[in-house]
Length: 82
Image (cartoon, rainbow, N blue to C red; front, top):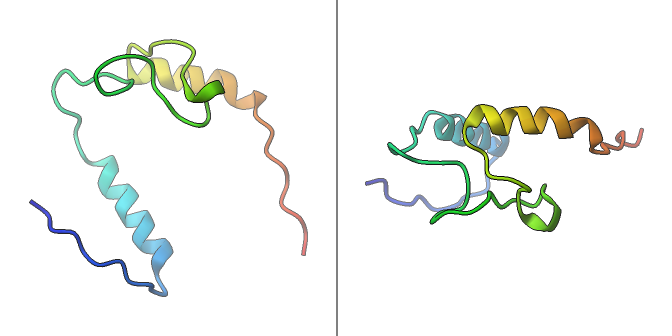
């Protein structure tokens, strides 16, 4: 079991976040795990209307396909030039 490490401000916080995300990408899901809420039901995330996915995703591919369909509908403002 990993012990929690104290949170310390550092100059390389971005790298530490990137390393943590990379580590999470390598964590395997348990056998039988499904996309969605723990205990069943649709996925919940703030990117969905009312924080709830409009359908149950049967696979990672189904979620990926859904995101490819709806991403063009999102509005991403250009950063302000400074």
